[in-house]
Image (cartoon, rainbow, N blue to C red; front, side):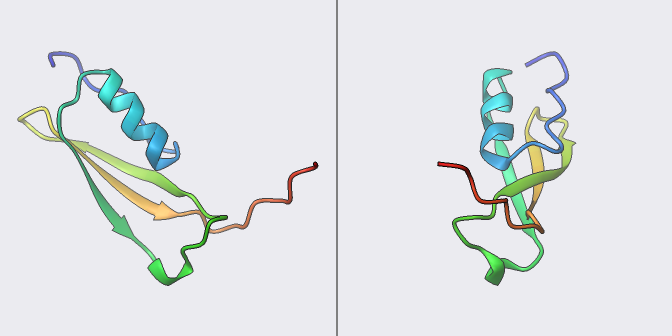
Length: 74
């Protein structure tokens, strides 16, 4: 990988990983921060920081969303 990876800060963690893989990043590590006991099916992990290493690897820092999404209309 020769070009800089795309900036994925602000994306849901799964989407950030997809974007980085599509850009050719071979190694993505994730550091989770925040209150893990708040995990629920209604909360998403979001990329809040991205750091690139000299070896082409990318480290994402992820935190759970702080709000509960509004109910979806059916």
